[in-house]
Length: 98
Image 1 (cartoon, helix red, strand yellow):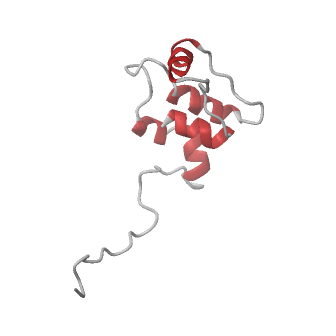
Image 2 (tube, rainbow, N blue to C red; image 1 turned 60 degrees about the horizontal axis):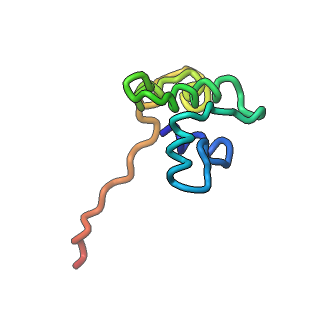
């Protein structure tokens, strides 16, 4: 979730390098740099999503409740992002009409 979010917000991979071995090395050693156009909330979200140690990294559920996500997507009431806002489209039977 963190790498995809970083790429969507910046247009670049957080640990880009010329080979797979160099990417792995960058993941292990490189400090994250955030472009100046990112808001403090977006930076905090990405920092939480890209913690190297998976035991210390925020879970997807925690990230969905991050203040930056809620401010962008949670609505004026600050509701949970996981609460349904749009009714799901009805499912169709793939075998119908055959």
